[in-house]
Image (cartoon, rainbow over all chains, first blue to last red; front, side, top):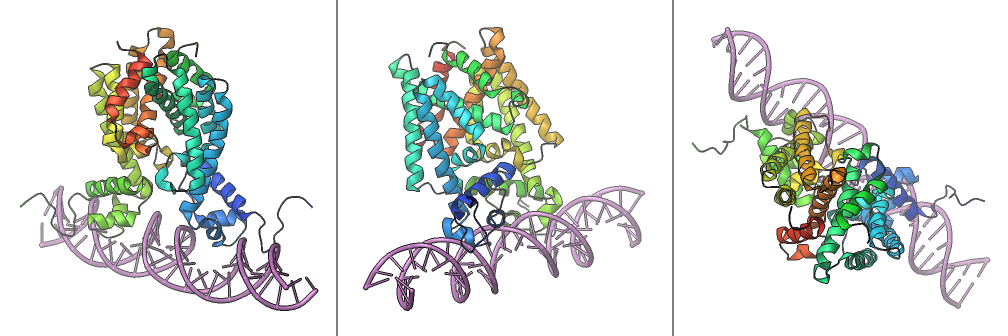
Length: 190
Length: 190
DNA sequence: CAGACTATCTTGCCATTGACAAGATTCAAG
DNA sequence: CTTGAATCTTGTCAATGGCAAGATAGTCTG
C-alpha cells in the first residue's frame, strides 16, 4: 500500500495536509485570501477538522510561519559557510522558492508571535544574519550598519521582486541581477 | 454651520469618509483585517452605502493604493531636488508616516492594477526613482544596478522596520539609522 | 483481548460578512 | 414644479469563522 492516505475517519496526517493546502491557497490568493473551510475541502475533511489541530486561522498561519522560519534558518546556515555574499543570495533564493512561507513570515499581525517553535527558528535565522553582516564590515564600528544594509537590501529585493514592482521581474534572472547589485553595494571581494 | 456633516440622508463626502475609515482600520488590523460593513459603521451609514462608491472591497483598496501612490510620488518628487540620498530617505519617511497606504501599495493582489489614476501615480513615482538611481552610479554601465540597489534598500528598510523585524525598531530613530546605512552602502559624497 | 481512555474527526448551529437587488430620499437641471 | 440622476437604505442569500456536542478510531492498561 502506498503512502497516500485512504479515506477513513482518521485522515492520517491532517496537520500536514492542511498546511500544504494553506501553502497552495496562499500562493494562489495571498496570505489571507482563503478560508479555513476551503482548506478543509482541499484536504478532504469536514469543515471543522482543521480547528482541532490549529485552533483558528491564526493558528494555521502560525504553523506556516514557524515552518518557514525553520526552513529559512536552515538555508541561511548552510549558505553562511560560503560567506556573506552567498548568505544574501540564499535569503533572496529562499523568498522566491518559498513564496507562501515568506509572505506570511514578515507579517506578524497574521500569526502568534509567542509560539516557542517559531521564536526559536526566528532567532536562529537572525543570528546567521548578524554574523554575516559583521563579516561584511570593513570598519568594525560600522558593523551594525553593514548588517542592516545587507539585510534590508536582500529583503527589499525579495519583496519588490515578488510584488512585481521591479521591471526586471518580468523576464530577468533574479539571482544574476542580485549579484550585480551586490557588487555595486558591497564591492567585489567580500 | 461647521464643516462636520450633519446626519442627513446624504452624507456629504462618503467617499472620503470610507477611505479614512479604511486607513484607520488598516492601521489597526492590517490591509485585510476589516470588513466593508465595519467601514460603513465607522462612517455612520448603512452597510451597503460604500458599495455605491467603490463597488467592492477591492475597490476600496484600489482607492487607498491610488491615493498612496499619488502622495508617494509627490514626496519623492520634492525630495529629488535635494539629491538621491534625500530621495531614499523620503521613501522611508513616507512608508513610516503613511503606513496604511504603504501596506496596500505593494500588495497588488489586493487591488485593481488597471486603475488609470493609480497607474499614472505609480509611473510618476517610478520615474523619480529611476532618475535618482542614475545619479547614484559612478559608472554609467552600473546605473541600473545602483538604482535597484537604492530602491531595494529603501524598500527593505521600510518593510522590516514596519514589521518590527529590526531590533532597532524598538527604540531607535529610523532616519538616523537609515542615514548611517546609506553612508556605508553608497559612500559619503552622494 | 476486553474495557476504558484519548485523540481525531463530523455534524449542527449562530452571528457576521460580501455581494446583489429593489426601493427610498435628495439633488440638479430645465 | 417636474423629471431624471445620484446617493443612500432595506432586505436577502450563500459563505465564513468559531464554538459545542456527538461519533469514530486508535491506544493503553490490566
